[in-house]
Length: 278
Image 1 (tube, helix red, strand yellow):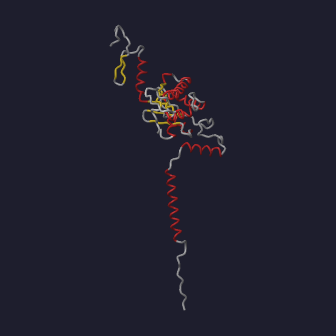
Image 2 (tube, rainbow, N blue to C red):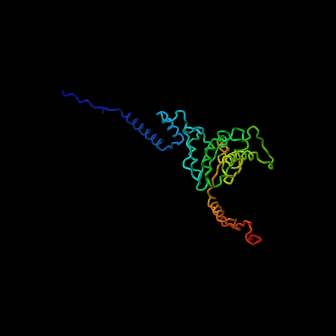
Image 3 (cartoon, one colour):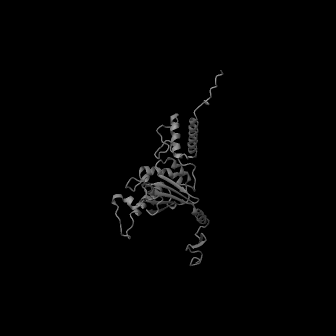
């Protein structure tokens, strides 16, 4: 009698394992795509590069390339420009605490420095850390031909005054954030003057609590609103060049001067005209 042939069960791996393997492959692909689409922060990349370099014996192992006070691997501003603050953006790479902020558009560049960097708590005199930071900017700022605006800002009154805050119903009284913002801006303004920047290249404004850049509804936003802005407004550059060229062209000031399609009378007398041409 012939032996019955045994049916084969197919062999190989169980069917559930194939489904499980497919699922794991899809999950792996998903996470690889997430990593590929993520943006690497340049500041943290510098930390990794510094760590790898020190591991291979290149550079100082204790040097932090992002430290504002680091004197070994600090990133100095690049090629100097006479009409631009762009090289100062390199300093943002060193700023782990977001104490520096740089914003720009086609015409205006604003470098914001947190007041915690410039001043000790409750003080209006520049700290050593603040002086060090401003001195690092001096080689570039001293080459800018056009006036720089130094603007002082504060957070709201409640945050600035802390436990001393009291609601003031007297609308005729000067808001207490005005003198504080004035002192913050004046400290930077005075330091630049003493460092050699001509007074004609500097202007100073105070905004108090009335020009916040960040929301006052969060502690982080209020902290960032305590700042001093260094502003370069390039929209006035053509007019300033016209003034300089006119000044060089005439040994004596002209009777009239055109500025943005408006004619201005300088009030100077010329020749025998007793009224100066008016």
